[in-house]
Amino acid sequence: MLLMKGQLVFEFVIAALILFTIVIYTINFLSSTVGNYHSRFLSSFLESKALLISEIVMNDPSGGIVSEWPLLSPERMTDLNDTCRNEEGYYQILQKLGLVEEKPYEIYHHMNILVREGGIEYVNCGRLPPGNMSKAVVTRYGLLASNEIAPVQITVW
Image (tube, rainbow, N blue to C red):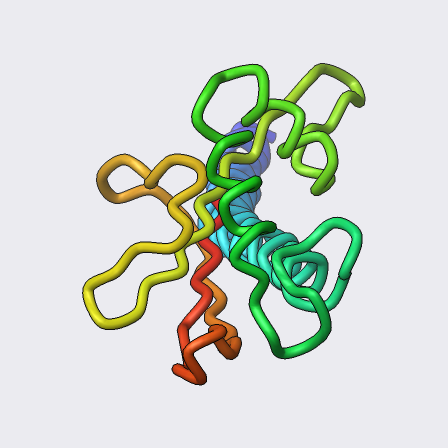
């Protein structure tokens, strides 16, 4: 009888060690995998927001900077720059472009719209991302009044 009791305890210790090893491995695997998936999700989410903004800016004659695609309107570019210069105007642009989320609490995604050609900056609206932050950049091209092709760069973070 005494030998059986000692053997049962030894088997229990081995089974417990195997169980704890499996649990620790699973927790470690899940924590590293969830981090990767979260990073990929954030990257895809920001890229979809940047693409949405680029569509609005380049294809919407009422809310964008084009008079008709692909012609960039100098008046609309100036209006966008003037609106974007103060905090209230910048916040209104963020709301109009769908970059303010209100569920379950208010989250701001910031953006920058940059139109520059030949050293001349036509539009610089928004803020640049600080440091090594996750961001998405989309570049479209439009035609200026001088028949120059200008890159329209949208950055969202």
